[in-house]
Image 1: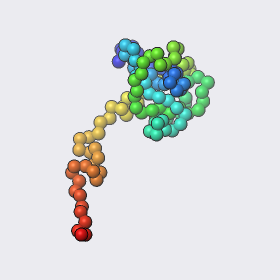
Image 2: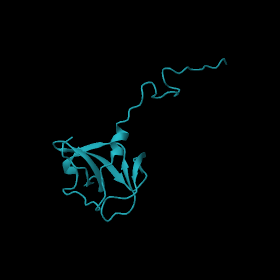
Image 3: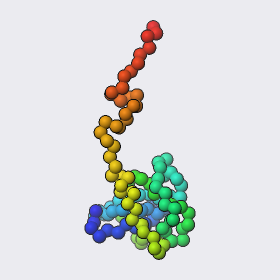
Image 4: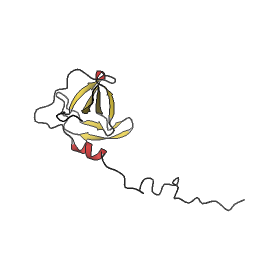
Length: 123
């Protein structure tokens, strides 16, 4: 991540929706997709009730998963933000940096190696 990188919104040209740009590399952007729907690609999202993009008053939902794509897949200019709104969402970073404690992934799921298989006695 660049030191003085400012997070912003740009239009993602593949789907003509705003994207929340969180980082950039030499020729790539790291971003989260946005939508007005509660689910993006069938997955849960973060809700932003006060939409920061100017002239857009519907609630915004930001996808939890990060994506990477080339800079030429985005609009040249940044989207204008409403005055007085901070778009640095720390909950995105905190949610993505959570780690599942060891031994709790799939605990109680019948297909784990620790589970016992019960066989019927019928012949």
